Structures are given as C-alpha cells and as structure tokens.
Image 1 (cartoon, rainbow, N blue to C red):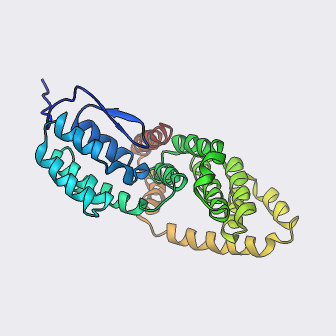
Image 2: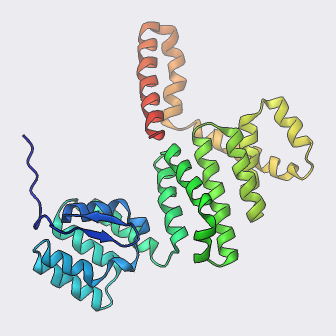
Image 3: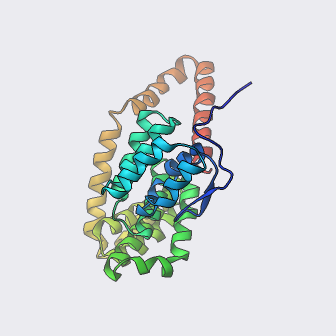
Length: 282
C-alpha cells in the first residue's frame, strides 16, 4: 500500500493559476503545475491572491509570509517559485534547479516566445509528434500571439517555429515535410543556415541521382550545396570515431563468427530503437 503525505491542508476552494487557467487544490498540485509549465509562467504568479490561498486554504502561514516578502520586495519570479518548490519538498534539488533556470530564461519573453520555448523543449526531448502538434497550434493562433511582439521580432519567431518544426519532421524521418518547413523558414528569415537545412532535407528525401539533378537545376544552390557536402564529410568523420559507430562496425565480424549471437543482438537493438521511436510519438 502506497501512502502520500501532503504538505498543508487540501483546499476547499481551488486556486486558478493565472495564464494557465488551471485549478489546484493542494501544494503538490501547485508544484506540479509550476514545474511542468515553467515556460509559460510570468510575474502574474506573484500575487496576493495566491499568497492568501496558501495561508488560508492550505494553512501554511510561514510560507505565505516568506512569499509575501518576495512578492513585495522586488523578488524574482524564479526565487518565488523556488521557495514554493523547496518548502513543499515534492522534487529534489536537481529538478528545482532546472525549473529555476527555465524561469530565469523565460523572464521578459513574450507569450508567443514562452509557448514556443515550451514546444522547443519537446523537440530537445525527441517528443517529435507532440512538438509538431504544438507548433501547429502556435501557427494557428498566430494572429492573437503576434500582438505581443513587434512585427520584425514576430517574423523572426515565426521563422524559428518553421525551422524547429522541420527539425521535428526530420527526427521522424519525414524529410519531404522537413524540407517544406526549412524552405518556409528561409523565405521568412533569408538565413543561409535555413537554406542549407532545406538542401540537407532534400538530400535525405531524394535518391542521389535525383538530388544531384535538383541541385544542378538551381544555380544559386551551388555554394550552399558545396558547404553542405563539406559539413556532411566532417560529420561522417566525427561519427566514425564514436563508440556507437565502432560497435556497429565490429558487428560485421560477429556476423561471420557467431551468427546466432549476431541475430540475438539484432533483436535487442531493434527493441531499443522501437522503444525510442514510440517515446517520440507520445
């Protein structure tokens, strides 16, 4: 039987976190929302209504006093949130430190930039399918979010969204869709890096002969294509000294020496790859 001990009382009246529009009934629920949505939080969290809720509904007068001091003495959002996380004790120091860094990084960002950062985090964690849904939602609500930024800054953010959406598609090996996104990013940003990524996606999408014909048919591609080939050559050299590559390379010898063991290890490797792929789709 598993027993969970809560800090403070379970609230009779929930607190609605501003900006997230989420109701919480306990300190643990509040901490979970802070950790999971740190990218979206702003100074609206530091308000007397929350402090009063913690004191009256959760019965934590000492914490409320500490938070009141932070809220009214120019305390930072990261310090305010960290005080809640540390007092409740739901997470260890590493998680609290990571959350604090996210809050510091997000200080001063617009709503659009905060939401983009949250989706970017999914890409870094290789959660590609949820990331694509997140980017599509950002683009769908673009008109409303764009009000938070100047036009030039908004265009830059939109280009970055398309770029990272291309990264997510590439992670799923959907190179045709990745190429479309990188091209859209280039048309907004004019960045040579975006165009090089576009060519890289086309190179992965097309058979080699078709890619050569594609590159030759666009004269302006020459320098970008040349730079891409140099990058690929360097990446190949770097990859060939990695332990993962050496392990795979040495498997050739195992295939001839002990085919049964070779097949068994293949099955294990496939299970690892399948598990990794499933995680990227959830």
